[in-house]
Length: 238
Image 1: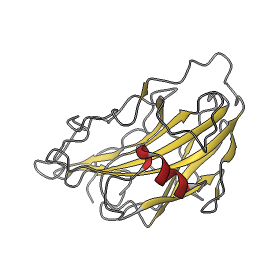
Image 2: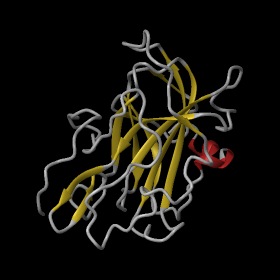
Image 3: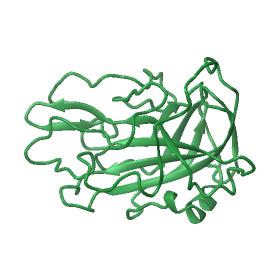
């Protein structure tokens, strides 16, 4: 993953806020897993990106992906990430099960997490240097304030383009800043998953850009994906 160690030590918003049960240790670019320290990755807008997880996403909760463009005259390597961030992907609830409540897309079998996921870099993304933030919000203990766990990783990108369909696209947004995007009392982060069973969930953070979509089934490396806007699956039991 491009400059993972530098990003995690130099940029405060990328430091995981939970014990390191797992982390995002490799960036995936168009089906290829990168090395551990390959610098800033150059990618075309519209590319298929993703993260490999060491070892698995082992807790229930959503995944969010954000981008922040480095200011003019600043590269991804020396950008502190203190500017505006916009969300490009959410992997959330897979389905709600009768008498059991929520089943998360990161744990499709209910008892074991996924070890990678992929998503599309919007074709409308303006060219430039960016930081890419991946966060998994673990909600297994989130019934009390401050006990949700945030697992965070970052990569450095140089996005070329514009990609197909970029002409006339609206500027990326809505935007947030880190820290400050979350206050910890949102219904998507202060929540009890276990009792009574949960049958609705409010996604944390802004809507995704450019289409407001959420994904409800993970697109795994090496498998044929079903897009980034899949609906919540019909109820079923395990």
